[in-house]
Image (tube, rainbow, N blue to C red; front, side, top):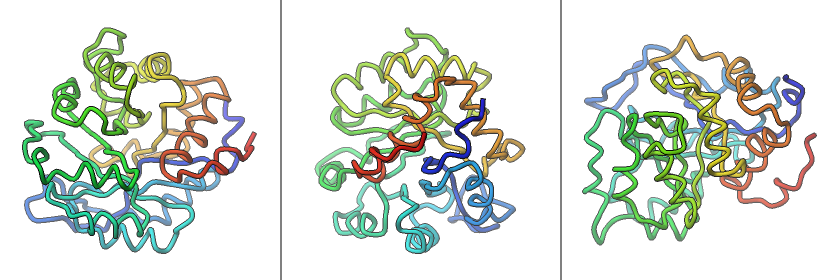
Length: 276
């Protein structure tokens, strides 16, 4: 059922733009192709996806020149997620906030998930709290609980790619850890990257997160251009999959419009708009 594909105001909370062959020294991945904003827009706009959240690719590190350029050109329709060093200053974060950034990303995939560098008196968490930011967290499958244990208990989180639990089951440690944290701290889960789940039933997992956290905790992202999974980079098909995961139009409206409007724009008027 694609009845709300054409409604305006939907948000893709996770996609990337970059240039071919550009990466920081030592990056594990170097793109061999361009991923321009115009290509994402051309695919997303006909679906009513008129706003987006640009996530800094890990292979660009903290070089935010491209991110800043795109945000400056589209201040009303784009927000950003940055990659920063543990020693980032309050002034640097404030400048990123002015540019349109609303979160930092910790991509721990392929690492030992040790966050010792992010602990101690110089950790940036108070600065993030002052700006109203969250941390976007991406871990290896089953590794989320160990990462959560190293982060402040009151730190708001957006969990990438459906959390990547070992099992789509209420008693899975990842599910339990997030459900417990969500009782006292804002937690959102991005319904994206089903091809990164190691064969888990993505629909069952999406509905499990809805049942455990509520539809108000869910977001949707295309993950375009699906690095290392480029054959999946079909935004209309990725968006249509959400309809099979969550067949209730009211729940999809929350996922696509209300929740990202609140998390990334913080504008009550945006939530109050009727798109159905």
